[in-house]
View 1 (cartoon, rainbow, N blue to C red):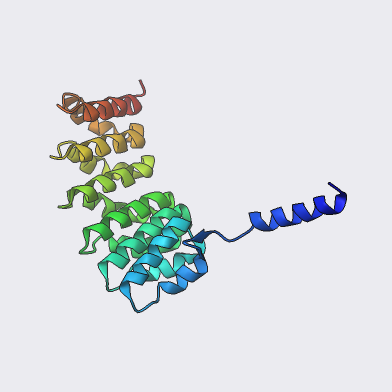
View 2: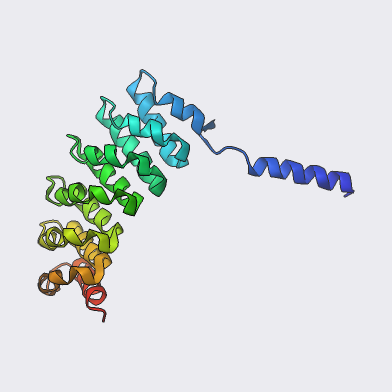
Length: 219
């Protein structure tokens, strides 16, 4: 292979490596524009595509889509912001509002997104904590997981997470225990309840509780 061929190959390879990511053969710019389509199914598909692409540049449009009149579009927009993580911090205010959305799917994805954003979403902690009492079990579970993502910053949620150790659903109990573990020593007031929960009939709960006790007590 001569020098000219080598240089050509390098240039082509470089161009390929910088190609814009695609979803179903279309770039994020296409899906961002589709968020404004008159058809709600297309708007929902667009939000899902942006979630798959983890499209950071689409955050402003996804935040706007949280106010879409169609619940499924709002839910997909929140899910897309969840996929973006900390880069979605511009959406904290609207995601916090979405925690009270009539749709359980929207509430769930909003909580997940705020948890993924982390410290920048500290102001949303009270709203996420309140979802531990949500009527939907999946929302309660996701809320507990989201609180765990904040670590010690979520210490004010310790009483609510302690109560969640008695939730009728084992997934919520597991998530609450792991969240308390992430809060660590700041969650020491939960120790008595965790010791009681160590007798839970469910093995997954017991495992999570024992882990939490070790993290909180430093043993």
